[in-house]
Image 1 (cartoon, rainbow, N blue to C red):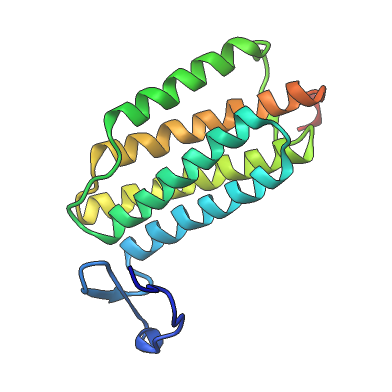
Image 2 (cartoon, rainbow, N blue to C red; image 1 turned 60 degrees about the vertical axis):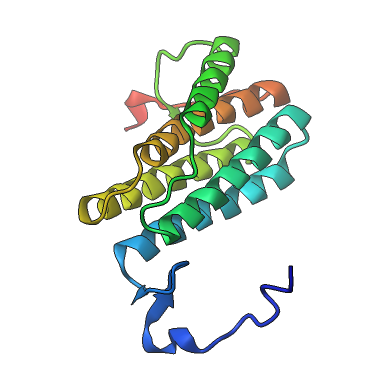
Length: 182
């Protein structure tokens, strides 16, 4: 295979459009581009998260998630294609269940924090929620595969409990929301 990305600028987007994988062009603010951008931003912040943790299990999990997110971006760029299989959702659910068994059940809401790595994980969680919203907005205009929407929904749940696991493994407390301070 040749060098696919040997020239980074093409000037084709100077008119306010971006190209999709099949060659079609859409406005840069199209629902499809918003969804792709949010998924890309999520992938980027997970890359930052990987740099903040020193936990082989979590690093491997997050790298696999980055690959899934890259595939989701590709799927969104190719209307009608689906790359996320149901097994990916089952895998996320298994990880959520296993991690959730390791942490103390919550009686109160928690705030993003505890450790820097957990805070970045919470940032990823909130971006995952936005990515999900953007994909749903796209879905109402043009269908998006069920498994992709489900994956993003489960991913935000996994990121929530992963932030708690990060704090637990670092010996940090979750930051509890205090009603009396509201």
